[in-house]
Structure formats: structure tokens, C-alpha cells
Length: 464
Image 1 (cartoon, helix red, strand yellow):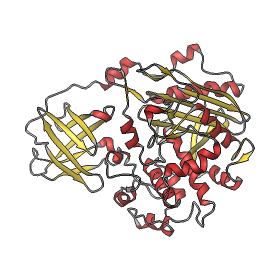
Image 2 (image 1 turned 120 degrees about the vertical axis):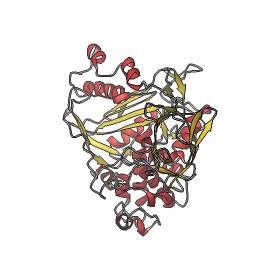
Image 3 (image 1 turned 45 degrees about the vertical axis):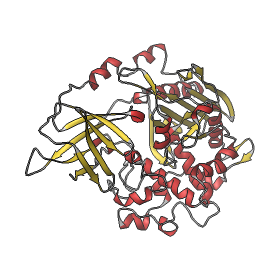
Image 4 (image 1 turned 135 degrees about the vertical axis):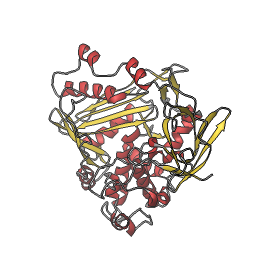
């Protein structure tokens, strides 16, 4: 893990803990790079605000005035802006797993947009959409004379901030830098390295989660924000641009319709959204915060602007329920807010986390032989997602989509399978549900992948 704390403009702590490489037992330090996942959003948004300063464009200028992008409705085509994209209010479906399609890249994603489903009314909802930050990265390149998004972020932010170790999973040579490898547990609960090639492909769209940074470099990022655009006496970002960054743009709220006990025994809210940050309160103190999660990396950053306090934490592995991140953030914050920490040697052990045995029991499925009456094998297609293939390998079925392959494991429902990722995507698991013809209930005519989109799962139609 990596942990850094800043207070009143100075670095209180910057340190790496544990091993960055489980095979060689090399230890992490304050310069070890970790994937910061969605903490990248704020870098992407800040970069865009900076480059717009010298152009006749604002965040509220309709995209149609300077880029040629087709959305799935006339309303979006006429009115959508960078502000809408960066504050998750387009109403478009997430379609996050389109990243498994090699034809879907930062440079081509605009060609897919017209086929996206509209799940909510424009500017009336909050749907956290990583693909929209990929679109923002694409637009950044258009506005920057075809420099790559990585080059633009480095030029306008990383270099001026002195974040010289920070880099990108899209370009990094992971075996030749001081980097914590990403690991996830297997079904046998053994940590296994996540493929760097998969991470590179998954983060190709850029602004949604491709930055790798260290405890040291993130102290500079936090000090820049807490000092409203200045660092070590230098103005990195103009005051008016920083005001733009702090303006509330959306209201994530909560999707739950039930009253539920909070994860931690005190008040913490994150119900407002600006550009790449959630705004809320911890114990009544105003905060800016964001969580990050990707394959093998978890992160959190929390700023207390009034107290000039910043906390950054990153780790490899899993953090179910955001428990590790909330514990560490809360404990450090309580110390500096002069509040009695609710976390101690006793409460840490009682914190509501499911035991490994409970998780194991929840995830256990009874496995069955697949029903040979159904002909699952064949080609399937979807207008947005493209082609999907089901093949019979020996006595087992295999699903192929883009560069991903899944072994299909039968369940007690003869038309439903669980899919276990193979090769580089070994950590990925999906659900696969087949549909039958109205005329012939034994004839397979479609396959639905709920894991590719919970709100509107894609349905692939069988072509042979």
C-alpha cells in the first residue's frame, strides 16, 4: 500500500508499505507507483479546463460547435457539452465492458456513441460513466493538435506540478520502473498477478483510470488543490479556473430507496459532484473526495479544504465494501480533526466485514452438465457491441468476445451459465443467459450478458 498525508502545506507522511512484487519480495517505498484508477478523473477534467483557457470554447459550449460526434438523440447532438460529459449527466448507459472489444478505442469510441442506450433524461440524473471520460480524453487530443492525451496531461499538469514519477498504464514499462504490480486473489484465495497487457488494454480510453502515481507525487497533487492552484509559490492554475473546478455540477445522491445503516458509525456524505470530485461532509467538516477501483488496484483521496488536510491511500488486491480505505481515511482524519477516533483495536475487529467463509458460501454454485438439447454454438451479434462467438472445445463451451475468452460453467438453470475468464482476463467473471425462439423453445436465438450492463444488458442475436 501507499499512504501520504499533507497538512497546512507540508508533507506529514509519504510512505510505501509491504511488497511491490510478491515474487521477488521487493518492498514498496514512497516512490512506488500504484494504479489510482478513477482518481484519474480529476486529472482529466483539470487538464481540459486548463487547455480551454486560451481557446474560444468553454465547458458549456455545445460539442457540435467544434467536434463532429454523433449521439443517440437529437437533443444530445444539439446540446451536450464537456460539462455534461465530465459531470456524468448525459443519461447514457455505461457500456464499460466495450473495452474488451479491440475495435473500441479512444480514437474510435465516438463512432460507437450513436448506438448507446439512453437510460435517463439528459441533465436530470447521475450515471457514473467511464466511457464519457474516455470521450473527454479523445476531445482533449482534438483540441491539442493531435498530441496524445498522456502527453497533454504531462505537459499541462504533471511537469508543472513536479510529479515526475507519475505515468500511465497505457505507456509504462512495468518491469523497468518502481511499480507495485497489480494482484487479485484466485478462487483458491492465492494472490495472482494481473496481466500488464490486459491493464494496458483496459485503460486505453485514458481519462477514466490510466494514471499510475506514488505517495510522494500525490502529496504535490493534494497541496496543489488545498492551496487553490498554487504549489511552492508557483501558480499552476489561474484562480478563475480553480473556481470553475470547484463549482457543483451534479447530485449523485443515493440509488437506494431503503434506510440503511452506514458503513462507518458516523456521518459521511458524498452527495454533490464537481469535475472529477465528489463533495460532501465528514463529521460535519466539508470534504472533497473520490474513490478508485480497477483490476488489482484500489485507492481513495480525501481533502479537507478548511483544515488544509489531505489524505491519499492506494493498495493492491481487493477492498470489499471500501472497508480498508474508509478505516484508514477515518482514523487519520480523526487525529487531525481532534476528534476521538471511532476506530481502535476493538472496533477494527468488529467492523462489519463478511468473513472469507461467508463469502465462500455465498459464491458457491452447484455445477451441472450443460443441456445437450440446446445448440448454444454459433455466432451472435449486437449493433453496438459487435460479434460474439460460442465454441465447443472438447466437451466444454467457450464464449469469445473481442480479446476475451470465458469457460462457460453450467448452472441449475439449463439456459444460464457463469463465465470464468481465461488467460489475461482470468480475474473476470460474467453471467451468460441464453434465449430461445418463440416458435421452438429448444432453439437458441440469442444470448444476454448481464455483466456487461446491469441496467440494460446487451442481447446478441444468433446468426447461424
